[in-house]
Length: 370
Ligand code: UDP
Image 1 (cartoon, rainbow, N blue to C red):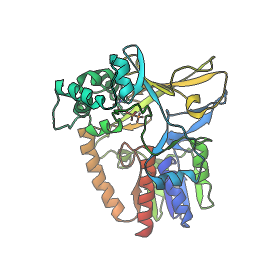
Image 2: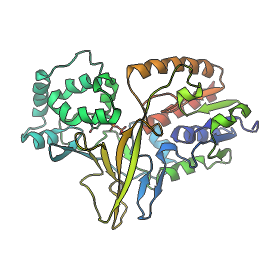
Image 3: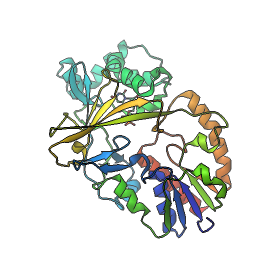
Image 4: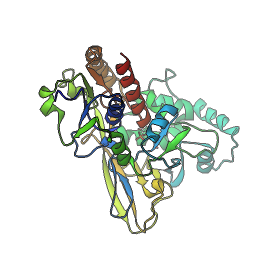
């Protein structure tokens, strides 16, 4: 074990990015992964129909950050896929996030781009909300009013998080734009796409370096007493690292159910959200994201769940408070120069893929320059 200068716990995007950057600086790196495969939650594979499936739910890469885009493009070619979502509301499939077309279609209006802010302002003027905008509900209602909130956000959010949206942080609302124009893309970021050969192939290439060794199917808890290294990078669950000493952080999971249909196409868009109907939140049709051809199609239904692998951190006050307690411990450990906590689970932050990579790039660079 002493051969390795760096041990990294977890082989998702954060772990693999960190491993690559350190390996390129000459550090011998051992990556330990509990799962039997690389790539963490962005793991994908081709099924028997030749369609690439994302085992842990749909992942679409998007970023404003050129250095992150340049980094991932070193390891994979990316398609130019621009993600689109429809929401099934009142019997209609309408563009989501809400834009001009959504409003015109749903309310039989004929608004121009200039009219949309006026329409929304009237909706907001009729609404009741707390102007401190601390909660998810208030943040959304302050932009679109109560009618659109009830149609698109309220029930989806209850399903997704199993709580009253009033208790969730307004930061969550920042993930979803509201548009005056007819831009039907889900993300507005300059750089968007999907790795042409998949995320697993991309991460495999990241790890393909003589200074990186990999141990799969190994729980760090079982070997942690044998580890003595210059640097330990932890990308697992924050509370687990500290044996839950301040209490358990909440995580939200999703049961992913794949279904293959004997038809070429299943739905009208790569993703259809179901805010008000059914127990699932959304259905993803993978071939619409990858452009793969098959006579059949495979889709996934997402059922949010309290049990299962941690997919999401839960953005509410209690968890924020608990996180701060753990982060004080993290700060002390990181001050020694022997530890880094990186990624969605270890920093307990609702990072998108690009921000997890950005965090790894920054933190590792700081450590190298220390
Ligand atoms: N959301 C919603 N209605 C939708 C889509 C999203 O109310 O049709 C809310 C919901 O609370 C969700 C949050 O917006 O958790 C963030 O959605 P996003 O699509 O960013 O979630 P992710 O892709 O990370 O699962």
